[in-house]
Figure 1 (cartoon, rainbow, N blue to C red):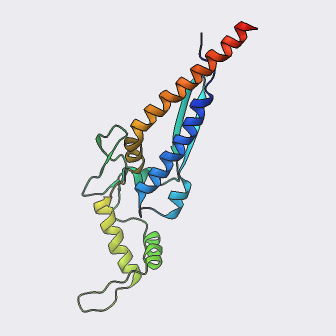
Figure 2 (tube, rainbow, N blue to C red):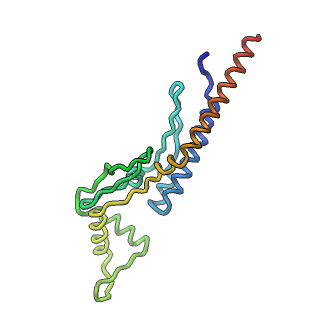
Figure 3 (spheres, rainbow, N blue to C red):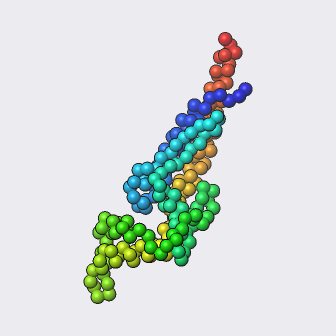
Length: 180
């Protein structure tokens, strides 16, 4: 008898996807903008008997997850198996977008002083920060991988229960069809 129903498996996949997104948002902490947290979603697709759960997010989600290697230092992240891997993203130039850094400085109201105690102009501070970010890189958060590693056991147990319920339902339907 071929397995026909995947109702409980789909239901479990949707609820697990929501749990995975919640955990990934928690792992982000204060990293990234609020736009990134708001954009994280789990999409469940079914092709034949195969269910896929895909985590999607804003364009910069992968940069925050894997980190970005600088020109002088390299960054690494944890993959979904828990192995440490080198980031596939890297800064090529010595400066990053100064306009974005200036917006960040004004939004966070950051001020800096020189050795004489005078305030540094915002544009100069943005240049210094961008040069530092480009050389050191952006540290990875591994928020998606950490969420998966934390919830992996719960996933296997829940999926086994869902498959069991689907099989029981298929057997019940088959028995009812045979009786009639």
